[in-house]
Image 1 (cartoon, rainbow, N blue to C red):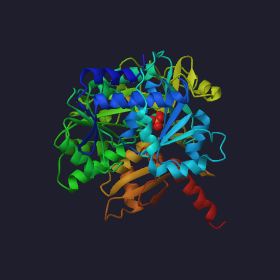
Image 2: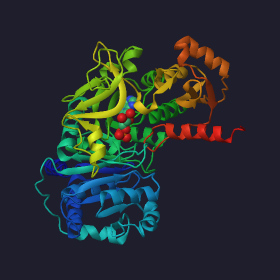
Image 3: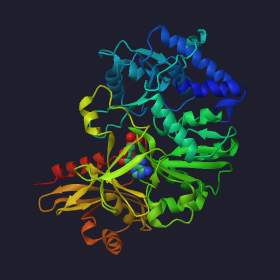
Image 4: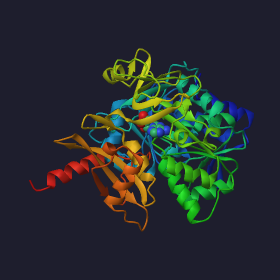
Length: 510
Ligand code: AMP
């Protein structure tokens, strides 16, 4: 069983259907996409074997699709690389994966080529998208995809590396198939006449949802900007039928602000799956008011791609804050628990580490037995996320265990403080971190992005927090900034905020 089969089946059923679009223009039909992938596979196999790793370093573009399916048709392993990484970080991934080749977009090619020089992986072939050599890859005869064992590696998912060097979560064809079936069963309902708009990076969430849309014979739509432009997103939702997209929470907010600013509502927006970072209740309520009941929340991680729990679409309708602030209930086929330090299940409402098991869970980290043994214990994936189940079986995520602030011996979960700050009318974004403190161990520091034109005072925010959360949880200090530092995947980089605090301390006169 090879993920490529989903494309081959759709191409057999409906070869003439439009598969890939750049903006509003149709680029390839299903027949053409499948044929191109099979030709590419022949080219890849000239220089490599099934099981070899082939990377893709590119912003979102149409060629991503033929590269992904060409790699699978060759029986090789797809290794997407976040296009926003530094070329040296990309080389680290190529070295760790011992990549045989890398597809690289014109924008990234020169930097990657020079960073690769002198690397032990210098022999890794650079396939420059858009070059004459690239076009020639399709002159090969199309090959038949090999029969692949379900356990064979399909995708090496490099974690964002917020805690040191990035690790490759090993995802098999079986893992990806389980993710795809679960997605089609309970996350989105659509048929052939639907479109997936790639607004978020295809190296991550948006890419993981490609197989579900390909299995249905639906459209893949690539914004011409190659990035997320809210106005363009609204245009595409007018131009294509039954549109769905995966968006990080910060993208949902940008989309809402644009829809409100331009007084536009997308004509054919069917579904937004959001997740990958906290969606704050206030923002979710505003987005529901603007776009209606199009939202489904996922909670997942690269190690259990897109599939641990979900807050389903209908559960958003008329929901109370506790429901909207939760990550919903376990996904089909997943066992999810919250456990204490000894690995014992926690009682209702008690906070512990979230663990899960099921067919989507990775088999381990690529060539990293130590990290694998830490993450996979007794058949369970230890997610590193803290959370609690309520009496209705809903999981509420707190924070990554390393982000919990311990002040005066009490655990403070930053998200709770952030949620409180975000209900203040003059606060646009907030992020809470712990700062080392001689007296308290750590103290709570809040970074606040004010609403445009607003300048909330520390006293006003303090009074607001006292109204909403326990006294000991409120920030000891506020830092006002114009924007929060975020990764390409829309996650706030808390590590950078902590570094800023450390820098300020170091610079302060003794
Ligand atoms: P990644 O492996 O890059 O997809 O990151 C996964 C991490 O993102 C998880 O372990 C969580 O910490 C966070 N995350 C994912 N989904 C959600 C969600 N719905 N709400 C809050 N945080 C989330």
